[in-house]
Amino acid sequence: MQFNRRQSGQGKQFKRGGESAFPPERRGCAAMSPTILVTGAAGFIGSHTAQTLLARGDTVVGLDNLNEYYDPAGKQANLQELARSPGAAHFSFVRGDIRDRELGGRLCGQHEFVAVVHLAAMSGVRVSIENSHLYYDVNVNGTLTLVEAAREAQTPPLCLHRPPRPLAIPR
Ligand SMILES: NC(=O)c1ccc[n+]([C@@H]2O[C@H](COP(=O)([O-])OP(=O)(O)OC[C@H]3O[C@@H](n4cnc5c(N)ncnc54)[C@H](O)[C@@H]3O)[C@@H](O)[C@H]2O)c1
Image 1: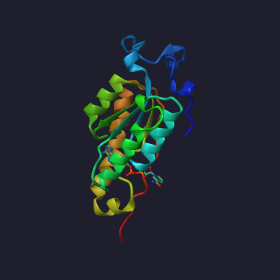
Image 2 (image 1 turned 120 degrees about the horizontal axis):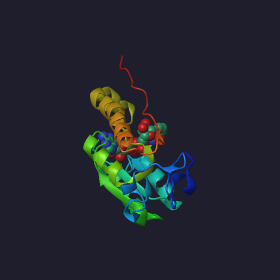
Image 3 (image 1 turned 180 degrees about the horizontal axis):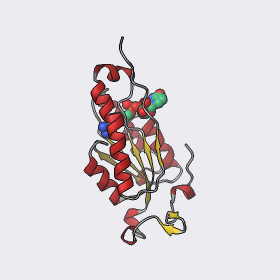
């Protein structure tokens, strides 16, 4: 995953075909500076990704529902570490679910996301066997919900998704 400040739009208005990708009411407002959305930001990969982006000067909004699939204390510890990281002043955290269409739309409307790094997932083989409906709902429907919210908000079409592991079929 390679972003730099220029690609991320940091410090300049994101352009598409020479025109701003955003409607006039979404331009030039300091409170809506270009930002990267990291889903699953309290998780293992998401928290490290957010840390790396912050360290190089990006602004990051982290989204995570802090579910209890594994000990949420570990996720809180990840968030605390993020809060102590270089660039932490440019990090904000939203507790919420990627399947929440209204929340996705609201976030995409509030921020000029130049990228979505989608790492929220029910990861791991165990959940895919024990709760395959939840696994499918989060990993497939949740991803679709997020993509649709970004598309409707005209978020530039840079959406990175590390797909979850394949569904394990128990014998
Ligand atoms: N950890 C690895 O070694 C590894 C290797 C290859 C791929 N991956 C993939 O990277 C992604 C992240 O993996 P991870 O190890 O960080 O997992 P993780 O479980 O540590 O993090 C996932 C995060 O997503 C959050 N989440 C789950 N459902 C959500 C929902 N509905 N809404 C909002 N947040 C939700 C969880 O609370 C958690 O914090 C997964 O797709 C995984 O398959 C991980």
